[in-house]
Length: 72
Image: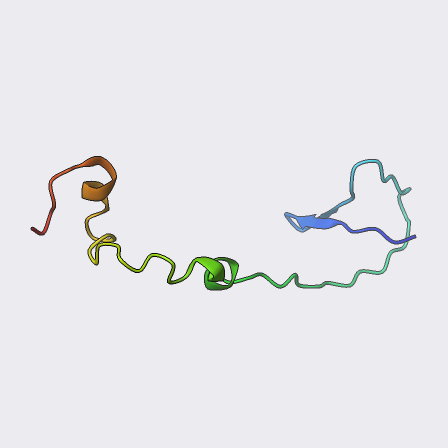
């Protein structure tokens, strides 16, 4: 039988409904799940807003809620 479990605080947590008796011998193989970078995840959106304000990051409060600009 093969299952996927999670390590939490140095303890292996079996999935719900899986109950193995004490003394059950197991073999453990660690694997890393590749994660996408932020740029990879949102690649389709990079460069789509070509005519936006160049100071959007610095003045986000101004553009989001109409606050006075900090640098202008």
